[in-house]
Length: 375
Image (cartoon, rainbow, N blue to C red; front, top):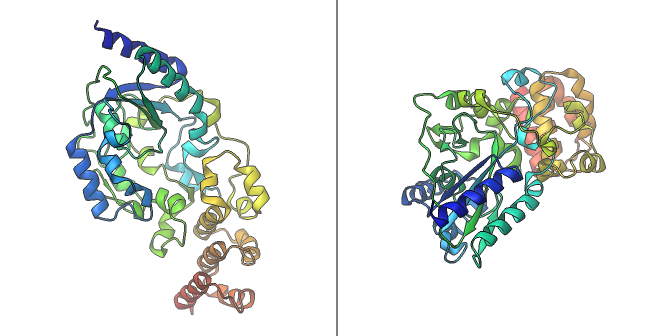
């Protein structure tokens, strides 16, 4: 075994000891991946995720991220802690949160193990420069992971690994020296289109192409303003992210659960009414250290209001009426819609009484929508 192969194998063994579930090495990004990404941006499918087009030169040229880069160590970390099927959608009074976000934010969980692995690489290749990314850097991580043999990009645009599934995080360490390059993974989706057919908002507009603007994960997390009306009913009880396309993927029937304690669901109610009653302090306490904090309270309760509107549960009416007094206009706006869904024309006098003199434009627009629908 050559010196490079032996060193790469020692690095891989250490990565697995640290708790990474997959390891591979890629070289430079392919011209085909860069071309597809540019086309995706040209279509505007990134929506309000401006960071996707920021620093484009770095996404298209790894050398702009780390000068002299020659290899990318690609890593996979399993986050699956519980079985999930589409039965969750029938429990309309309970909010659905993506499996990866049930406890601690993975960005923090991984920090120390990446530092240790980075140190190991620097020991094996004395004097080399490295750069770590945990789902944050301007690189095309899924095409790189496919080149590194970790899996293939499925029709839903998530990475899938044979006999493993897709419930895992990706991360990378860029290195300015040559490591033993892995064999790329082959696409094994075949004729299956389960992910395309299950998507509630038809966000997978063609195999391997996602219009993020329609995706429930985007709508509940990345979108900071008003959720477009045409997607609200399709959101069902999703309040943070969406796993539907992964739940139905046949490869996930082979998924193995992790024993990483940081990813197991923390204590706390996911009943929609309980969540709707949270004030700022309760939100901070409930989701401290959680990815859910990204949405802030106003974003999460916006999503909860939509889910309550979809629940058909008239017990939610009084909590929603109370929420018409919330200090966040974004929350009040979606509460108006929810009351319209639950009460129809009976919501009109309640809204007139509770929101007389309302000045916020986004709330007034929702009132007009309910009036136009049920007057």
